[in-house]
Length: 468
Image: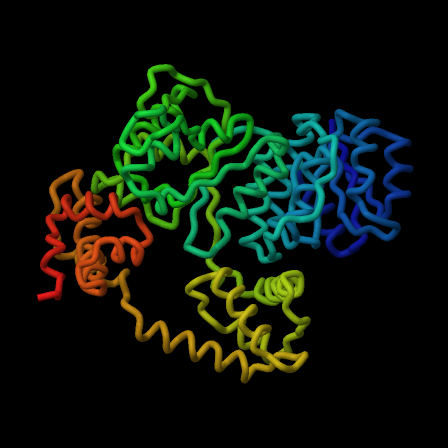
């Protein structure tokens, strides 16, 4: 017996192509181009699957899907949309859609989903609330559609997510979107940049500590795991976590329990983990700098964020978003000429979305005219490039060191850190004439931390004392 499909699509050419593809898979297809037509056909008969566009001749195809799902809970719905935003993807998910396909879509994949939906005779449960204002994940490129679809797949579960991507691509925004649009949105969202915490304090930051656990622990402190209980813990730059902390993190993920530093009791915690890194973890695992078992614990659902150079069609909507942000932050209202947009779309954006945002804000700040012209932006880009040319390329220096060094197995992280940390501390001491207090202030670290690292790195601060 042929399966029945209802196709609600106001673009006749697209409807014809989808109909032919479904009929080739033994579907009988009824078509209409409006909400009113959809409702008449559903009232007159039953369907194994419905495929619907969002923008129809008489309204929003998503707005009434909750009512359709209530009246026909066993009919799966597939949403098609040219409004390729995260908000549209989430709305489709929240109204009980079996699947969401942004246009243009892969026809073979669409037909496969229709077959699966018809065979399953039911999709995900409908959400009770519509999401609020869309989160600032901007872009309608195909690569961003893949990101949106991955986000919607993890909203109704607690699977651990690993967000991968270069610096400045928006990894924390993805984590916030999963939290704020997901089942844990009423719980806390706690973020920790593991690269910004001194390695001797990372375990205390994660798990907390008891009074007297170490020098300076004058009172009990609650760690990020406990702070995030009932919500989401976002661990940024997870690739920079020291090995000893990786071991304790793995134990916490395996058991669902933590123990404060200096404490004896295990504490059960209910948190969803979202981790992120801009590093390639595979060579770190091979070198013993990152635990393979921890990687597999974190890499349950990977979400790869594309660099801006791979989604240059998104530059213009991003720019317009940043212009609105600038006004909200007290800067004057500005527009960009078409030539300026074209110039921005041609840039490599090594700093990705963050770099673009910074440039837009600078352009707004320094422009005296309502319209920002290409010449002004070209000058700002030139200034940035000149600054980059004079800066030390630490990435190249590290690559050169890695090519020449032969660290012992499992020692790559410590040896690389020491190789680059020691010159940094020596520079701070040289700049301050050996004054440890001022050197610590220059580095932005505690004086006791500086002293300990100087001992660990065998640096004699008296060598930099120029008082005679």
